[in-house]
Length: 96
Image (cartoon, rainbow, N blue to C red; front, side):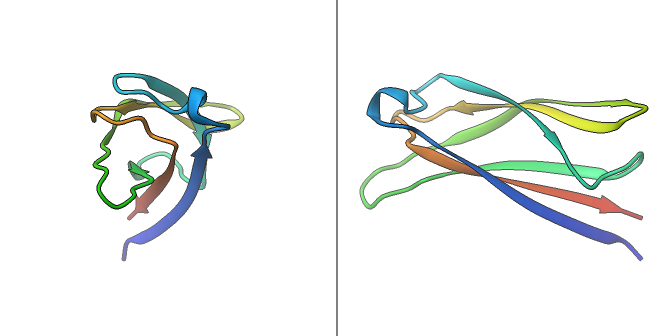
């Protein structure tokens, strides 16, 4: 039977000047409870207010492993037309 592991992180801007602007990116690395052969999913969820549409994409996902473990490298890009003041990142690992 498969086992699903989920964890969540977030980023919040320090103020208006530090919002994630349209077209801008953040580059991240994450360590998590996953191993060789796990299927991994990374999703970014923008903060949304009434009347404002925001969109994010997760790009360039890479897995690196060495003797100390495995890491996920990825990029979050603002693909919408509005600045993003914060977002959450959901991680899911599925093992068989």
